[in-house]
Length: 507
Ligand SMILES: Nc1nc2c(ncn2[C@@H]2O[C@H](COP(=O)(O)OP(=O)(O)OP(=O)(O)O)[C@@H](O)[C@H]2O)c(=O)[nH]1
Ligand SMILES: [Mg+2]
Image (cartoon, rainbow, N blue to C red; front, side, top):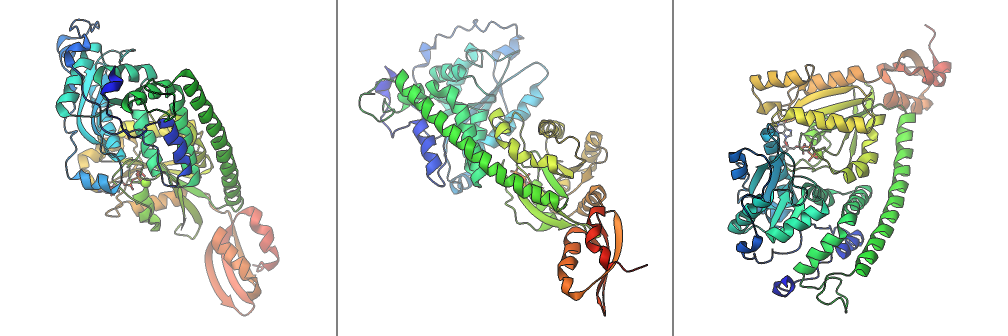
């Protein structure tokens, strides 16, 4: 039995870890966490028969796994990784692509590499197999699984990350063959989110998403954990060196469901509080701008440039998970709010779309969406499409959108022409050089609702409150001090007129 070969380690009960993470402030669930990989076992016993691949693929495509170039993590990254206090797994990435979609698959792998690094892993290599469809049993074809096993052994990798969401059975079958931990894209994204979530609501949402992801995989986790921990699962007497029994799994399931129900309650309460806040904002008629875009597109940098907000900017994915709202105002003095939002990514795990729906619901209430697209990204069209999908999903497609191509300082004029093809009224901006920022602000001002009525009032000095009201919610055009008080010309919404009627200067 494999159990006897595995060195005993700390208890690896994933369920306990997650449930514990909920209580320990700052603690995060680590899907990556369980120590070094077990010893690799003899390669001869995998039963690989070179002809059993079965699919009608072209010969060369069948013969080799494709390497994705330039995926290796440089050693300098180690300090960054240590600083972030995360795991140092050595990972190999794997993906499957169809005919004519190699480029897309490679971009997706590059992104997976960035995700894995953000989560704290060191990427050793990436391999792609061409197949019409992933193998339902093992994701890669059986023959390729054996090759992957050799690559993993040669590189001394301890984790394989698949660029997909693996079915629980696929993950288990792969682990059985390759003998190292196998995780998928969804798990990596969930892990990053759990590391980066700061607010109570954000944390609760991520935790809920993690549990939802775990629930159907419980048996699989239990089994591989029992193997890795040398049968210490559960830590309880009587469980011995066997895997967790049905009872243990049932118990775990129940504990997770209970915890999930509790989290849903908490989240609902927090959402109520947020709705109240938003309703107040709406009542005050302060228009709202939301910056959305792909992760790492430069949203926070843009917000900082516009409002000096001091939001964390980092060259990692999902640096921002909690919306930051700041005040700004148009040239002609109309105030508005501007919010940074969580970034998007292709194949955002559905558990997270659901979890973050409430956060993204803010978009519906926005008056203008500033859609940031990284001009220097290899595939801006896919970014644009992914983000628009999500905008559609939260039913915010009616909100006027301004496309901005960010990081304009990094691109040449050819590239600009290309990008213009994607959105011909897109604005090129650079948070670094300041290019295009004024243009963007002018466009925002154009799209924001303008208070419609101009008033000319003389407000007695004791009505300082009305003066501030106009500054905050109207657009002050002229202001002067006269004997009887403060003379103001301002634009307001028609329904604010009543407040000022008695002070109107006959004209
Ligand atoms: N050259 C250049 N780099 C930029 C510019 N704007 C942002 N960046 C860089 O792009 C990276 C990501 O910037 P952020 O502002 O954190 O991006 P974000 O969209 O908020 O990212 P997440 O919150 O992780 O989704 C950082 O390394 C920035 O320094 C720019 O105008 N020019
Ligand atoms: Mg950000």
